[in-house]
Length: 376
Image (cartoon, rainbow, N blue to C red; front, side, top):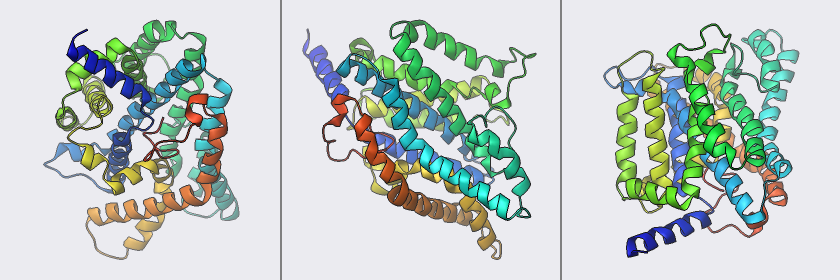
């Protein structure tokens, strides 16, 4: 073995031992900022990328697919198998308490105040949100954002089970076949099928790309190849530049090849940030406010349209540029998410250790945050 190959083998061992990918929290922080920007501004006319904040959700999906699959692969290596029961309990403790807490609060509100503005739309959408099928039907209220949470929940239900049932068949056959099938509708295939609109926008594509990345980097040969291509220190900056270029395609509708190009660049960005930790964007992505925003990004996303309802009414009395609304929503949503995380969600997150794989029951290294985007 050459010195270079030995060095890459050592790097792969360090990668497999990594408990927290700190840069992923920063990327998730950028993602949620993009979503907030999308919901509060009309974009800058001469800067096309500013109209594409909604693509922050696609980056969320790539990260989620990568982290969940990495967790499953490492559990199998450490314990010889995958406990679906433990996996689903951990997901329940992370996702359900704030999600159903919000839905219950909205249910009580629209029952007690039936004349509330948008109450009718919320009442109509609540059953779909409760059942995690918001991505299957048109949603007309502030609960429309639960489409992405439904997508992730459906991913959690299916992919871990396939991992357990077909550990060899899944990455080699099922995963590539599933990816091809989910990216075909935007190209006009299956026109007669009554597919929901989100299925025609490659909804599951970025999640499956994240799953594939986890499998690639878990394998010594795959990690070695990734390291050769993306292991240089400036790779994340180059990948981020490609993301900006792909998001700047001057078309009103980017479904089809443009959206796939965006997903490919997002995949490169995530891969370049986890193949080595000491990259050029590390100081930015590990900057505490951005990283902390990523840690509580689930709450920020979950609560932000409810918060927006209040922020909009407060600011409506004043003449102000859109960026003021964006900043106000960012800070207010972050504050609500922190309160929820510290006073409510953390009580459930502490229980996750009881259902962690044996390997993960050891104390986490400094900097690993429970429930954080980058923690495995």
